[in-house]
Amino acid sequence: MTEAGASDVQEHVVKFNLEAPLTPLEFWSMRSQISDTLREKLAKLSAAEQSQITGEVEQAVSEFFPANQMSFPAQMIIVAGKKPG
Image (cartoon, rainbow, N blue to C red; front, side, top):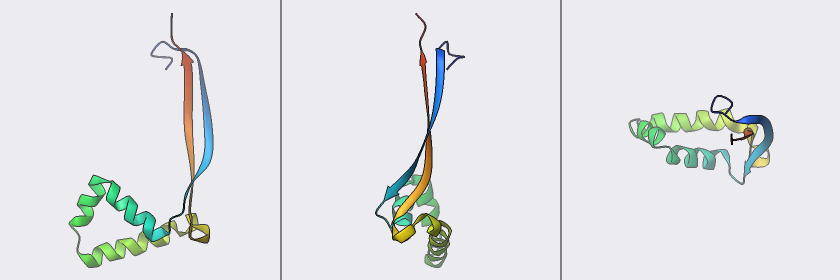
């Protein structure tokens, strides 16, 4: 923003948990359908390969599903500044 001419630039990091009442399987189902790229790549795989990936994803994300509810740590950077003039 400074390079674009803004002054008094301030940056704040906001940390939070991204939570939803989803199981790991529901998360993967939703995630694999909302991405065109991922959906296209998965469609090229056999049913057995897709099933294997589903199992691997469920295992890999299990730590973010306490009590079978999604809770991913996340952060957002908010940058503000004053424009010239």
